[in-house]
Amino acid sequence: MRARIAGPVRARRDHGEGGRGHAVDGRRQPRDGDGPARGPDPGLLHIPVDNIYATPILLGDLWKQNYDDVLIVSPDVGGVVRARAIAKRIDSDLAIIDKRRPRANVSEVMNIIGDVEGRTCVIMDDIVDTANTLCKAATALKEHGAKKVIAYCTHPVLSGDAVARIASSEIDEMVVTDTIPLTDEAVACAKIRQLSCAQLLAETMTRVSNEESVSSLFTE
Image 1 (cartoon, one colour):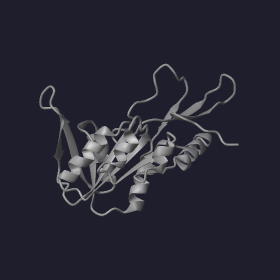
Image 2 (cartoon, one colour):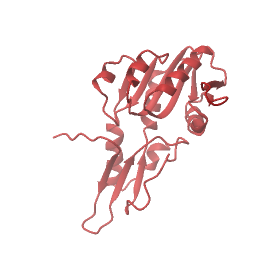
Image 3 (cartoon, helix red, strand yellow):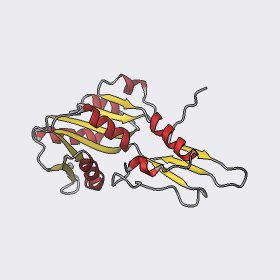
């Protein structure tokens, strides 16, 4: 019997009535590559909670693809710490997209900080919703000479016309996890590829059950 789970994934273990339980919480990627973007909501849980992240899955795929001349790109200034941590893990350079609006009622301008010419640019983000910003970022990177633009995102919300926008964009490939099931349209999109979180979730729950370290999954 298989169960389908939508939204944040949690596994809880209880130790008898009134006993001490344990939960694992799958949310957005950590901003620094190791720590949580946001922890459990205070007051809602009275048991220990371990945050789990998709970083090992995304990094594992990135290593497996063995792209040439990889450059990690932060999609905004707020994601610099996370992007820097990932770049350090794969011994890559770092570029930053600085988005700013010169004045009211003027289109947003995307400035590229770093040399992207001839590089395979990998954008790391925690969530893709409308994909508008990612697609604009890909256009800006290609205009500055990027050879290829790959986007890695943990949670594929893909609302509205996101899939059609990605299909017609300068993004060469978007890699997402299965924390949110893809629509038929997204599955049919040649530019979108989905990775499974099953092994990571299984290992996390096994470690919780055996009272082993969960955090070491994301620091080793």
